[in-house]
Image (cartoon, rainbow, N blue to C red; front, side, top):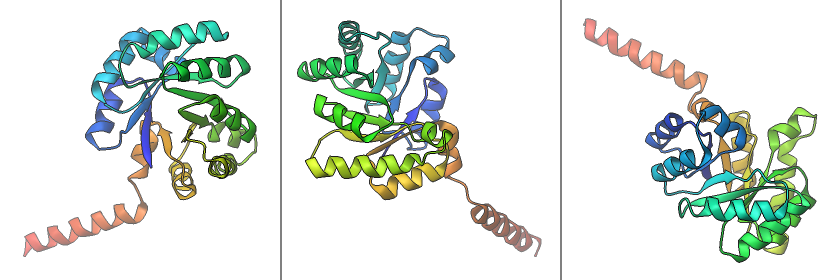
Length: 215
């Protein structure tokens, strides 16, 4: 299972890379805005840090604008993946960009039928948002299970990228279901390293070691 870090914070990316947690990076307009920097500058810098896919999102709402933005973003670096919102105009853009050899990530997916349309349009990756479904009382991981099954039924090549991750449990469930990728905030990556028994074990080992020194 591949891990993408969901951030535009350069320091977080560097720390995650140092720990071996980064196979790629996803960004969005909100994350770029938090960085206080220009989109193209941030994406160029991130692409220098990792050879993995780096998702950069368009902001146009019409297919012509999305295609133009996508072509511009793809020129920033070879590992840029153009992030396109799930909508009718977006599918036109995905089909065109795919024909041009540009990789795409269809975002804001909340149903199996949306994932089906994205795959048929040729999306490289499809991003179902599990946390936002959980927020409205729906089990987001059920959607992941259904999309994986549907893609297997028809041998679609689009990768399932689990997004809107809120906790290590989302990662555990996604891994057990066989999702291709999860995009994860750095704080959740850090949480994944912990367990109460691990902490207790370390404390016990240190206590025993200190006792041996006294002797």
